Amino acid sequence: MTNLGDLVVRKSYGGDVTFRVESIQRNEAMIKGTEFRLLADAPLHDLVKVDPASPSEKARRARIKATESLKRLHRDRQEQTERNQASLGNPLWYAQNEPSYFEVPGKVLHLDGDERYLKKSLELYEKLRVPVHGYYVAESQMASVLYRLLPSIHPDIVVITGHDGVLKNRPHADLYNLTSYKNSSHFVEAVQTARQYERNFDALTVVAGACQSHFEALLQAGANFASSPSRVLIHALDPVYIAAKISFTSIRDTISMMDVLNNTISGTQGVGGIETRGSYRIGLPKLKDLTTLKVVPSM
Image 1 (cartoon, helix red, strand yellow):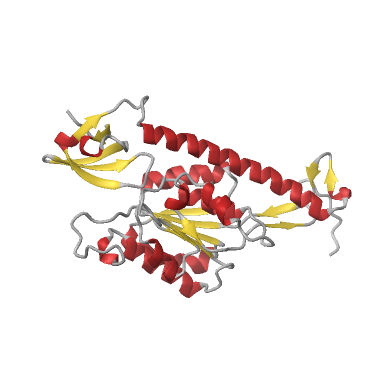
Image 2: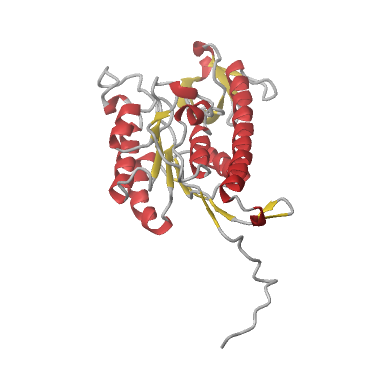
């Protein structure tokens, strides 16, 4: 018997993706991907419970790739520190192997249509030391929420994601039509709102889309990076990896397209984009601990 919270796979799809049961109505269940941004409904007879300790092969590969991506981001961070040291040149700016500058990574505003994925995303941002403001927002409300938040938060990077997908019973058979997608039209509206606020693609970097989203429409609306070129499922944390890479790439550098896309779990079939500058800056000298600073008052 299938219950709320169970981990399941779909027999009709060969058990390729692991889901969590979110709700049950009569003989139908609403299920949500544990690794991939996929929301679906399925008849109960099509679901098979799985052991949490034995993930599907696809989930196992995704977790391995996620671990590799995280290690790569940490290596990138170390290389960034070495480049900073080389660019400063003067060894006096280093004391006891500690940098004597301060960092200003790009600030992220992350809107997510899935509360559980948002929590995972915020945990990863914190681990990577990326400054972020995260909000759980229904996809249909993202444009209006962005209109209110952008002037107060002033982010360098906006992430617009949640759930999407090509509709099974779509009114138009062609994939060029936005009505063929669950939420792509809402993501497009949100991107357009972001671009009305800031037209410069390097002053505000926009990462948009979810599983099977209308890649071309999102880029045309003004996204720097978007999903999904091959209309495949994207990993829940792919938008975070892209935003983190942008946040810690120097404003002097253009982000390596293949580097950032290969750093995602889904790769170039799941995510694509255009040339974009980074958002990271360094400053001198290193900020002081004002609680220990001895100052002689001048007034």
